[in-house]
Amino acid sequence: MRKGKKIAALSLAGLMAVSALTACSQGETKENTADLTSGALAAEGTGANEAGSSAASGDRVKITVWTENRHDLDYMNKIVEEFNNTNDHIEIEYVVQTENYVNLLSMAANSGQSPDIFTQVNITDFKNFVDNGIVQPINDFITDEFRTINEVDDHLYEGANVMGDEIYWVPCGKRSGSRFIYNKEIFDGLGLEIPKSIGELPEVVKKITEAGNGEYYGIIFPGMSGPFERWLEHSAEMSGVTPYDYKTGTFDFTGFKPWLEVTRQMFEDNSVFPGSASMKIDPARVQFSEGHAAIHANASQEATVLTEQFPAQIEWAVADLPTLNGRIEGCEYANPNTGWLMSAFTEHPQEAWEVIEYFGSEEVLKGYFENGYSLPISQYMDEKIDKSKIGRMADFTGADYEAVLPVAPSVTPEGENYRDALWNACLQGGPDIDETIDNLNKTYNAALDKEVKMGKTKRLVIKDYDPLHPGDGTIEYLDN
Image (cartoon, rainbow, N blue to C red; front, side, top):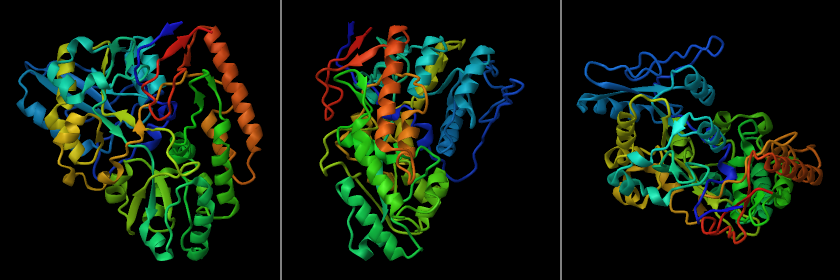
């Protein structure tokens, strides 16, 4: 058994939500794709010639940077250009990879074409990258100034950006937890308010749907784009319900039953926008922005989506998610982001670090946050930005119930993953809810027991876990 210090870590809820919740703004983007069949890694971007190249340009070292983010491309191109115009010994090659990002990074590492630095990846891929020696720790590079600006010591999340004492990337920003984004015109016109408890929700959306008479519906889901983690899972978190029971070190999906029942009721009442079960996120956003659904739910990226990508034709507002009983009894995860990993294969680690430090500097981050691309994770940067410039992103700030939750063990169960299974049980005519939950409890705990026994993972136990203070417990990693 190994006992860990009191250290926070990223939630299971954040494991698979990152890519699903990424939004892209309007405007020209320089996108790159790779020929996966031939293994060629073609790339074009800011100053790009050949992906993975660190060849010198004149007397300068070229540092190749890969990202999968498109929503911030205009700003990043601008600050990369400023760097390249003023730095006398480093030239940044900035490349946006828009498809198969993690696979491309793995292929690049195996073929000797790895970029020098690249944007952070989700928890499962992070662990794989560390285990396979694709990334390297940055402890020895972190400067006092960088540590102060980004409050590094306050944002060490075991299993998410650190492994033991080794720091692999530092989050400079965060994405908020999910919120209800609602059509204020509809709610005001009908004299309705966003419900505080999930039990009230079916009645409210039914009233809206009846009033809409086919013009608009009570609520919309992106059924083909991670619908369960858009808000149902986060509402459960705020109620103290998570897929993993930290106190006992086992998976337990029993607590999700009320959310499945409520959602199925809304489908059965025909209060959900038609076609939601087979709809992707962008079409759902369009329907909401055009006034055809009264409630949509997502995190802070919707601030940019509804003002730039799909400008809303209606007046919209933001509200806290409803909880099981109307009270907040647990923290909702806020996803750390805006961080950079350093390749273990870079031939220029010091120069690569200088680029990471530049991206995490006060000047660059101030513009990044004030343009609404992310929210500051450090109190230092929160006090530096002009909040009058962040636009509708301000609607997603200020929640004192958000936190970074402990990383549950990553396992591979037989059958469906829990999010797909729970969502399918939400649908009208879907599988039996009790049977779905019982099956998930069996398959996930069987996989956990098996993989702990094989030494592939460890059982996480936090006997003094408090869902309202998830980072304060004492972490234990057990071999049984």
